Length: 97
Image 1 (cartoon, helix red, strand yellow):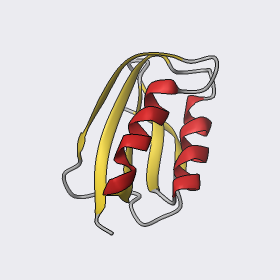
Image 2: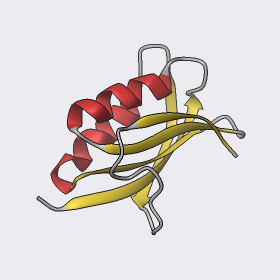
Image 3: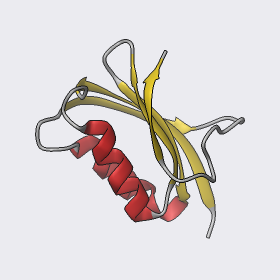
């Protein structure tokens, strides 16, 4: 099982709607590690390490969001080291500058 670490950025109505908690719950269900945070520009960003076979599911989760979210755009790509939070339980960061 090959692990892949990716960074993501989701824009739209994604802050104040439970997006981070939704991502954390879904990531933990998949056995992923990493983190998710609000960015100062109104987007939600994060780093996720998970089996490569689960990447399509991660994309679905991030595009859907929780019920009150409205995702306008999703950027996702391989993360370059260092990978903060990888190997630890998936967590919510308060803010990401």
